[in-house]
Length: 361
Ligand code: GTP
Image (cartoon, rainbow, N blue to C red):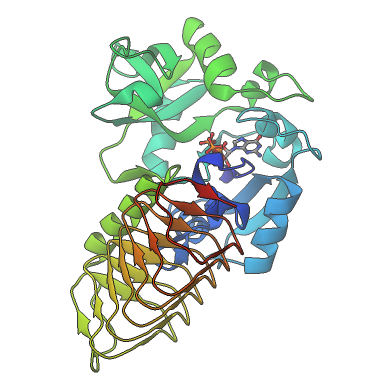
């Protein structure tokens, strides 16, 4: 079975961290999201993954080389400066996907425990043209919402309905099985939205089915969701610190990658994920936060609810309030305080207190 992974979006809601990496390479508990996706696909009988990306994303993925778990991996690249949206890349990859068998299409920014074999079985049984994985959420309004009738049939599909207008709580989980006939529903050579142009038409024609999932499902599209995904995975892995802390304290759950050093009297956790070779000084407090690889945190800094980009340097006694995002290679000088929700662009130097949260470039 083949799977097409959509990973060519611009991840605008994750800026400034997405200025330096595509969303699908964001680390979730020190492992790129794409690696988690490959692992699950390989376990579910998929043998080939086609990555629908832009040229820059292809570059980053080739550079990082996430393990493939035996999957054959190919790229299908959007035309330069012409992103194809969420359906255009399916049309573009039609020859790679082939015309004989149904295939999986997956958003490259979801972390989900989907049984792809069961999804495929539902698709085959119902003879659908498209089967969408559906997930139940409390507030469906920022997603595509499905109205189910007669068991699996989707009568209506509405993308981001207005408050109070959602026909159910069942949302598009971003994973589908499509039959090759789908290619006839997608115009070639332009951006096409599967959610707004293709699914509503299929629902009208009675060719759209739903497959309800029960397992874990998370979208990492926004910084808060990204932090939450790390927390949930930390909990589920019940990670125990592999090293016995010497001179510093640990509040589980935490995850420290290889080569991390921590100074005396620091307190790491709860919910701290620290990337490869990060250097943490003494008397530092880190909780509810993710630090990317090579980050450096000097003595006395206090970080709670923040994301620190790769190679960023946080000075002595710096205090970062929840929701702060520090871009890759940025420097926050000694004694600076950043208020809740501040965002610092990659390589930016901040040497004075910031009073009001804003994007600092
Ligand atoms: P935001 O700008 O923050 O909305 O993010 P996004 O556009 O990257 O992601 P969105 O949730 O809107 O898209 C769902 C999935 O489709 C993501 O995995 C994207 O990478 C992917 N995607 C979105 N637009 C394109 C596109 O034009 N081309 C390709 N190849 N993939 C896309």
